[in-house]
Image (cartoon, rainbow, N blue to C red):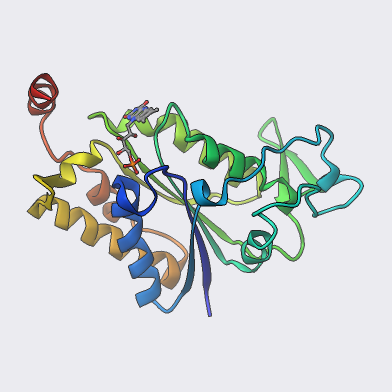
Length: 232
Ligand SMILES: Cc1cc2nc3c(=O)[nH]c(=O)nc-3n(C[C@H](O)[C@H](O)[C@H](O)COP(=O)(O)O)c2cc1C
């Protein structure tokens, strides 16, 4: 059975815009037969990576020297086929999400580093099953470009694991999925595309570009966006 670990990095946990997009993705993966573990970085509150000399790459290969809430997470991550990083843009990341990403270091193997395209790149350790990394990123402002900094982080992380980013579900002005607390018809269509993306990643290890476009498409015009901000 395909296993997926989803990390929601939003401080709003299961109540925010990130959760609104994450849930149909989780549902889609489950429909396609995956076992999904959904974790919240803010609940885990990982301690900062702090030994300063990569004990997990040297003295105890693959094992973090910090003993905290991440201990039970490492086995889940090692067994997962799919890793989903979900976050709001917080110029660029919420603190707990950044701590958690730093703490992924024990999964990487410096002895498998390669030099390609002018860059030094690591690989996941033998025994780490992750083959697909997916980003879900929501943001408040109108334009898709507001997700660029987070997208670069996810692409960099995937490259350092020796993988391409399997898909990026980017949802700008995510608040516009709803009006007066209720999903709009366009919001429902976006979340249906998210659900389809979840099914696709499990079934084929990829997400169709048209589906990603349907997730990201503008929900209001730029003019209406500015009008709504002026009235906010
Ligand atoms: C500290 C902070 C920084 C933010 N920075 C940006 C930003 O740079 N660009 C953007 O489009 N939205 C930004 N936002 C808005 C959030 O990304 C947006 O409201 C998102 O939908 C929140 O998701 P959530 O409900 O899951 O927390 C920021 C929000 C906060 C609280």
